[in-house]
Length: 265
Image (cartoon, rainbow, N blue to C red; front, side, top):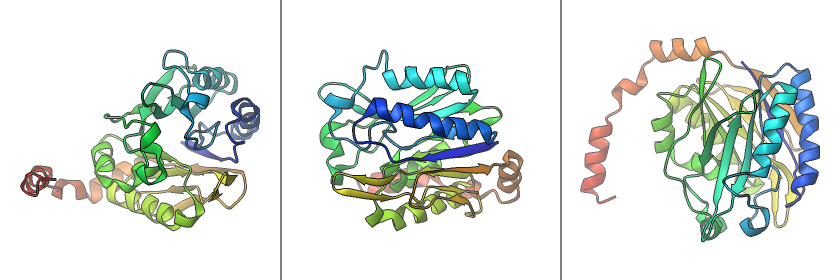
């Protein structure tokens, strides 16, 4: 499967202008014969703490309606992030859309970023999400979720590709790059980290979007400017590697739960 990461520089809270700009990435992805194109977290607004301004109703989210039409038009699977508006707190979401315009899965970020006040405005989700793209099973997480390996261990028995859309700032980007590789190695799967570039209010984003294979090797690594990163993923490679080195059979989840209960975690 050929995937494409749209490393973008969204205009701040300017959804409609960003809709127009996103189309150039869809065009390039189709011309490059990609099957799946992935956008960063809060793809069309940037990482905003104003859900009352950028949020969309759960019943008819405008961003998903727009990209469902574009998925049909361009014949692509599309991953896109948006905000579901709720009171008293909203949700940071990431959806996967089929070339038929179907919403395949729509994940709610489990770990809002308390250090960045996200948890003041956004509630955390409480479930994993999966979807099928051809023979592949894909699981989305969002940005700060990357720091919590437990959910990746739960997802990876089903998922051969885990996608991590992000708005990860430059001053902590070494964490982003290291954790993407660690999650790929730990879970013996492909990891796609889709970051943004540019400036937004007080933050600077260096890009560094990455596609990492199950051995921790970089298949694509973005620079500091907008670009479309493309790589071919091999499903059979994941299956053969997991069969040859079945590391997960040595995990002890029951013991981990017992130890956690004993420590009152």
